[in-house]
Image 1 (cartoon, rainbow, N blue to C red):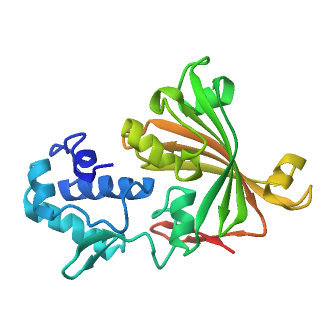
Image 2: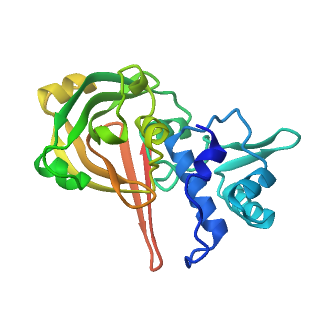
Length: 260
């Protein structure tokens, strides 16, 4: 995906309460979250971004400084500015998908596709995606792996109109990258509901653990930059490979995830 084209797909809004540099920062973070940007290819120059979006260079510079302070990007003298997928601290605020999560932890993410088909949405799937019953969706079943070890058993649903062409080979990497390339929809927010479960036989076989093993089931819906749902999924997490940390204070809640 061409970053300048993606950034300029929709104009920034100077009438919003949010400053333009913050709007630009959010858009860059959404691109990073899809993992469509190559970590080895320098980002466009500040002036090129300013010219393309009709911004001052100072606005772009402030955006890049905030991204650098947050370790989302890294500047390399004489080479340019690059996405920094290897971050020191992994939080849900810096990774929206498994590919980004695992890469941020220094491991190699991969997927094994168990099923891919089109079906008509109904019931809870329709409700979560905000679409009428009967709308065609992709049903995607995958095992997500870190350094070759199964970590998650995922069943995801995506409206076909957002991503008309999906094949199993493409699903071995990031689904969000496919959706972003096909429709421009990028993750900006996700809601997740966690519950404790014991693994059924298909889930246990996929995750290579005994039937009945304790696990976590996550019901997740992901929203794009316009707060429209574009993917909903059921994620089964191995209980022995995932830990969560929640910190509460008077100003905010900090939530982080550790894969072991």
